[in-house]
Image (cartoon, rainbow, N blue to C red; front, top):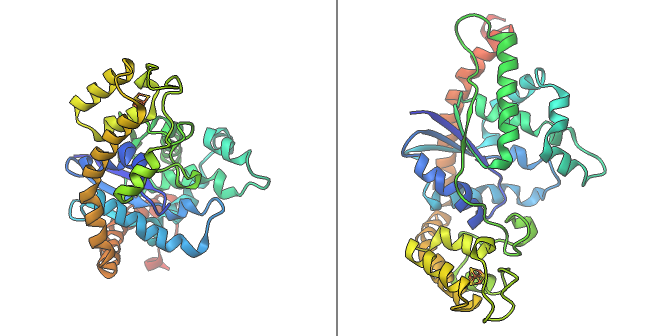
Length: 332
Ligand code: SF4
């Protein structure tokens, strides 16, 4: 059994892109490994954000995670800012992280070029990610292709810290390995960009049936299907990708056939998808509604998750501080 760490931003809404791309896999992993899953609110403040709704968005994301199937008895689920050791280790790892490596990160370059004034937090984002994982000595990190560069940097940071502070036997930071996601990436309903709440192109995991259908109806498909008689290519259609996440294998085959032969129109195809999605998401919505009725129990669960995470984090930090030569508080 390996230890796994992964995090998700508190966007408030867990959407089907997050679900099919990551969270569905987390639900499986919690039965196979020791898992820590975190709502990464400290990462969320590296860009402009709405202060008034951050706390509620964090709670809503936690509701989405539990409703989707994360079990607090099996996995440690918590809020990043509730475990202060994340920021402490982040600072210490900053001291061994080469600036050039941070500046070379593709995600940093993409985000930085869209801003007039670039906050240092955006540059150091991958160092906080490294701290998130190394704090728990996690050895596996579920990632998509787009996160591989950050994972490689994480490994480099661990190597550099170890080379300087973990010479000889005893404690060392393990270099985590990628657990590459096999899920096909779901695009937003525009079929152009990634699914993201800020881009308004999502279907929420908790959306009611009528909203799901209203959102699916105008969603982008293969542009070759101008009329019902034009055959299409399901491989380039985002609706087909979503079918693969929610429809049974037989239906997926039928969708591909009917698309290629113009056996049905895109609206027929979307109606079948809507019905399968609505059926699959109904129990998740029900669990979410039950959690929403018990806000105190939800906060208690998150507090208990943070306590378990903190116990591991404190053990790691005691070793890190000792290796780095700090005066222990008890010795002062
Ligand atoms: S028939 Fe279905 S898979 Fe084919 S283009 Fe239309 S929506 Fe996409």
